[in-house]
Image (cartoon, rainbow, N blue to C red):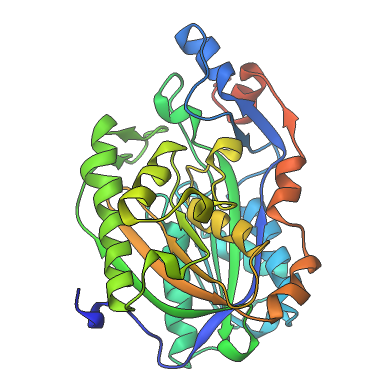
Length: 353
């Protein structure tokens, strides 16, 4: 791999604030299996479900407020608000302007919505790194949030979940974690799609594993490791997109990472984690426990298909500001179990005319 494939901002940048939000409702996978498949366990234990009064905008706002609490900056200093999602509340009207108005960054800033399936959040993060790293802005906010959809009875219904994570990117000397470099690997691989006016997405079944998920994540990870002359043992943690429990574990073994390095970012068993903020929510949970000097590899995946890879190094500032907002584990513990009927109501699977 040519080291020139790794992207470096013109000035050093990092994450100065981060925050997540996970809805409290949980649907056990046994409920999906009971209703559609006559019983069984399903590929995960349970997933997070947005309530009737929650959507991508409200989830983004909660995550952004947590990020602001850790960043300790005036929201008016933020010059961009980007929200990545595959379930924006409006077909024509940005989610980002709603979020910006709610957190107080308006009116002098960029605002846009991004889409790239489950890597829309890291796409927003790449854009924020570029804007701040070029010197055009001091701070930029990147969010990945979703209330992801799954057709009733489809395998995706086990894992398509709700949640979100926000990162404020700023100068490296203020950062909780500094960026060493990033790399993106993208091809036209149609493993997952949804046409206009279709309520539920379609997917290619086993095709979503190979050549989609594994090829793109492995290529992105190998590329950034080679470009930065790093090895798996150089990292305390590694986070890979987690559509289920097995996929990230399998790709980690292929790349030479251990099960211990995947913890505590492996969240798919408890919140589902098939949504636009999946990989970065795992990163957020890892920042909740990481120590100064530790290096973290993050690799997302979005169907369609592509992966973004990042290498971060934790600074001394993290320990001081970590406690200023709820941890991901706090949201995981705050759970209310629901049955399939209530889930169908909350996710508008019952059409009433």
